[in-house]
Amino acid sequence: MVNRRIPRVLEFGLAAALLAGAGYVSAQIEGEDRGAAPIDSSGDFEVGGVTVDTSGKTAEAARLAGWRIAQRKAWTTLSQRLTGANGSLADGALDSIVTGIVVENEQIGPGRYIARLGVLFDRARAGQILGVATTFTRSPPTLVIPVMWSGGSGQVFERTTPWQQAWARYRTGNSAIDYVRPVGTGSDPLLLNVGQTGRRGRGWWRTVLDQYGASDVVIPEVRLYRQYPGGPIIGVFTAFHGPDREPLARFTLRAPDGNGLNALLDAGVARLDQAYQTASRSGALSPDVMLSPPPQPEALPTPEPTPTPGADPIGDIIAATGGQAIQVQFDTPSVGAVTNGEAAIRAIPGVSSATTASLALGGVSVMRVVYAGDAAALRTALEARGWSVQEGGGTLRIRRAAAPDAPLAVPSPGG
Image (tube, rainbow, N blue to C red; front, side):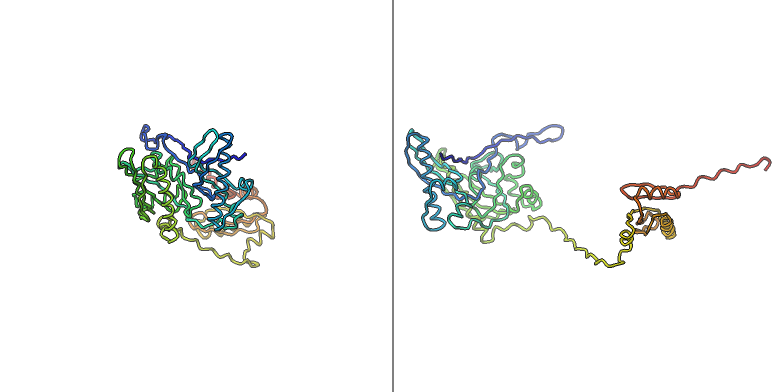
């Protein structure tokens, strides 16, 4: 039994509120009629427009038979397209590489099935069987903001529009443009709207693109004109690129009535994608350099000195004695205080070295002490010699303990 998924447009709704002052203010991100998730962004090979007319004992049997016929026809078409020769595969092999059946139109009767279908083939497996390359170079991530003008007003994601749904239906995996297609929920209506497409400030654009992980932006726009209610629909399509809305292509399509609107928009998306791919190949779709983050100053590498024997006496002492390096902060109001402080520390048993590593005359200097013990033991030894010691983070802060006040002289009687 053949079981194939039928992709469809998924609709999501999201309601939110913005806090303003002491209360909540309804914002344009409210509403349930919003959101059209892309149905497929994979790179599967697609063959569309396959017509079948089959019969069977039941409606389900006729349908499955029609799908099998569609797989065979689509594989022959794909082989001709990629290799120039008609190819065929057994039904079992086709079942293993077909990833989906797209129902474009179907009529199901008690024992008959008439349909126009699309067939998706796994790109890697089909390419391996046909012996063709399956990888190609794509553009940097490019944000898509589909703008639809109808009845004199423009919309992007304020509500789910047929134009947004057409971009969600389009299979971008085989395009040379790496499209980033927002769903239209959450903060999308606030960040991506008709007003944003008219701004020129690169700073704000850079913030928006970073939000969606994109490096560039394209603005496919359609303006719909209805001759009369229920009558023909004319769509004027324009491919804009970048914050400056640089026009790359413009064309007009026509649908006989409202029933052909989706087909009109699908055809418009396909032609706009071709326009963007052509611009990318010619170099006209390169991202604006002002949309990239400002370059950070490159840090110059610090040359590391080659270690030589005796070049690091403190390190040699630590290695030879097995002692521990401890930082000691002490007051150095004068040069004499530095010398006296070092001499006082060296006089403590277990101290192998005491050298001022950071000198601050008139302030607090840092001494590097190599001691045969830990910081707690050194603190005890310092306090035993009259130092006031504070410990924090493995560093000792020492001060000379204040001398006790001298007793007041009591005058003798008659003195």
